[in-house]
Image (cartoon, rainbow, N blue to C red):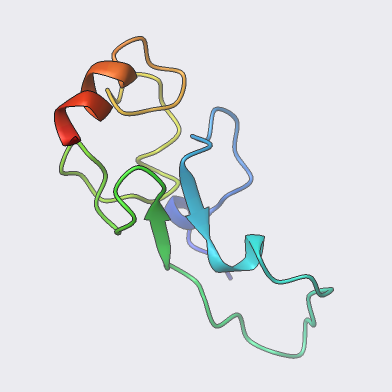
Length: 83
């Protein structure tokens, strides 16, 4: 069973958050345990840590209140700071 903080089926999820099953084109097999639970990365940093220094996971990446969130008005400023 998937932990709620790792649940990717939630409103407002940042489009910069990525996980392995987005790139696997196969129907899930309920008899096989998921092998990628908890493996997330931010497209802006290409690591498991977002540009704001916080962990990139669904529970943290579903609010425009986070400055690097794709819907945040301050996102452009955060990305410029990385360059």
